[in-house]
Amino acid sequence: MCKLLSQYRAVARDLKVDAVAIVPGPNFTRLFGAEFHSHERPLVVFIPAEGDAAAIVPNLELRSFDLIGFEGEVFDWRDQDGYQHAFEALASQLPLSSLAVEGQIMRVFVHHAIAAAWPGLRIVDAEKQISGLRIIKSESEVSLLADAIHISERAMDHTISKVRVGMTETEIQGLLTQALFANGADAHAFGPIVAAGDNSAMPHAHARSDYRVQAGDALLLDFGARKDGFCADITRTFFVGHVDDASAEVYDAVYRANLRGHEVTKAGVTCHEVDDAVIGVLEASPFADRIRTKTGHGLGRDVHEAPYIMRGNHQVLEAGMVFTNEPGLYQIGEFGVRIEDDILVTDNGCRSLTQFPKELTVIGT
Image 1 (tube, rainbow, N blue to C red):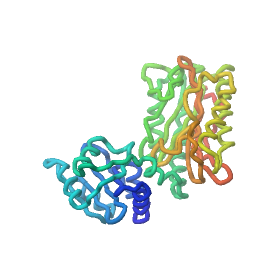
Image 2: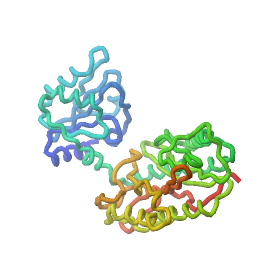
Image 3: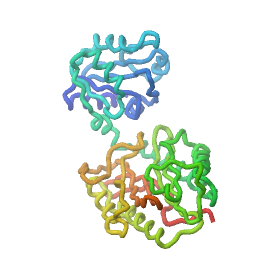
């Protein structure tokens, strides 16, 4: 923990602020090896550029918080009294004129409590710098990611073996969820997407209970297991019963775009260059008007994190980064195709952590 704390102190120094504030979420879990829920009770750890860390902790969480081995002073509070006095007590011990926060995670009421306790405080959104500390995955983190991915792949294999014409999307989603937990998932990485027919053309569709899969439908499964704090994110698109030539042509364009993403990825290229290569394949196809998404996003403790694989993002890829390669084509009212792999960047290229076959596959026969 001491080594990791020093990283956050360095962020504070680099940003020329007095401290960094961390709230429950992926950065907190990385730092302390424990998960705490975000709810109506604020829990905040303050890590100053110099000196000891301190924390605001709900009294009912004190025992759990003790178990993480936190060495700084803890200011607890009870529901009956409210939390503001705890912030003010900490402020009397830790004078601050500036503070870096996780802009995508810290909730507004926590921000207000901090601002009230330190009048005139300059609050800086340091989401990029704080979350950037986890953008390069260690070997152990890659192994944990691979475990989550392999659980997901086994669940996918089991699920598609059970799919038949006439099943509803929610029935298939139920099979998928059961298979995930049967294979060792701790939780869903995110709400799974199970979409057939015209619903597959919605990139973030919700499973329907009133639609039954028909022969010839595209069936898109986008989901992932969460295991030991790390997320998988996999998409495969199948066809149920049979596939016509026009649908197969769309699938082939997405398949080639996905392969191109693997070909161009290596340390030293930019996110822009990868996206440009992948989307370029789709733009050169007869289906360019069906492009609706970028190539992908980083993956780790969060299912969406840096780096973001999109045109205009000139961030250079480094060995140890992990991102999704998920080109897709979507014809609203008809069907969509997406193929998604989880890729580890290496010095000389990349390694796909996803091994599930992605060639055109007909199921439910």
